Amino acid sequence: MIRMLREFATGVALLGRGIVVVFRSPRLLLLGALPALLAFVVLATGYTFLLVFLGDEVELVTPFADGWSAGWRTTAHVVAGVALTGAGLVVAALLFTTLALTIGDPCYEAISRHTERQCGGLPDEVEVAWWRSAGRTVRDALRMLLASAVTGVLLFAAGFLPAVGQTVVPVLGALVGGWFLALELTGVPYERRGLRLAERRRLLRRYRPRALGFGVAVFVLFLVPFGALIGTPAAVAGATLLARHTLGDPATVRRPAPVPH
Image 1 (spheres, rainbow, N blue to C red):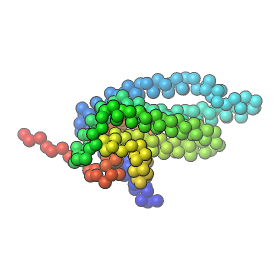
Image 2: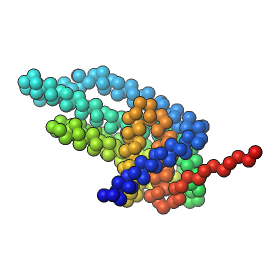
Image 3: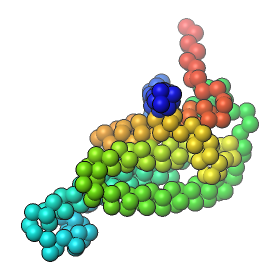
Image 4: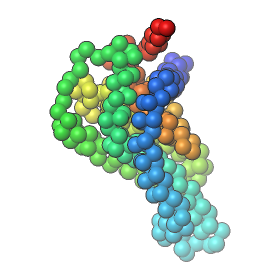
C-alpha cells in the first residue's frame, strides 16, 4: 500500500514537472493554450446548456418517479441532477482532451518534442506519415470517446445508489477519468515511438498507480476554472515524462544552459 501511494504521488509530481517545463518556455505555454481555449469555449457552451436545461433532463431520465409521493419524487430528481452534473463533468473533461489534442496536434507535438529534448532526446524515433498518424489518432479517439461515454452512463446510473452515489461515485469518476486522461495524453509520445493504443494500455497498466496519480492530478486541474488552459500544455509535457518512465528512458529534465554574457 505504501509503495502504491508513493507511486501515485510520483505520478502527481509528473504534472508539476510538466508545469515547470512549459513555464520555462512561455512561447510553448501560449502555443498550447490557444487550442485548449478553443476546446474550452466549445465544451463550456455545451455544459452550460446541460445546466440550463437540467430540470427538463432530470424529468426525462426519471419517469419512474412520476407516481411517487412528492418527497420521494423530489429526492429522485435531486439525485438525478447531481448524477447528471457529475457524469457530465467526467465526460466533458475527456472530451476536452480529445478535442484540444485534435485541434492543436502540431502544437502539442512541439511541446512533447521539446520535453523529449530536455530529457536527452529520442534517438530511435519512428517516422510515421502524417495522414497515417492522423488516421490512427482519429480511430483511437473514437474508441476512447465510446469508452468514456459508457463510463459516463454507468457513473450516472451509480449516482442513484443511496450514500454511495454521493461519496464513492465522485472518487470513482476521478479515478476512471484520470486513467482515460493518462491513456489519451501519452498518445503523443507513444505515437512517436510507433506504439498503438493496445500497447499503450499494456505499458501503463505496469505503472498503474503512477499513471493514475498523473491522470487524477490532471483531472482535478481541469475542473478548476480556466485550469485547463494552462494545464493542457503542462499535461502534455508531463505525459511525455510518464511515457519515458514506462519505457525506461531517462526522464530527468535538464536545466537549460546559462546564456553567456
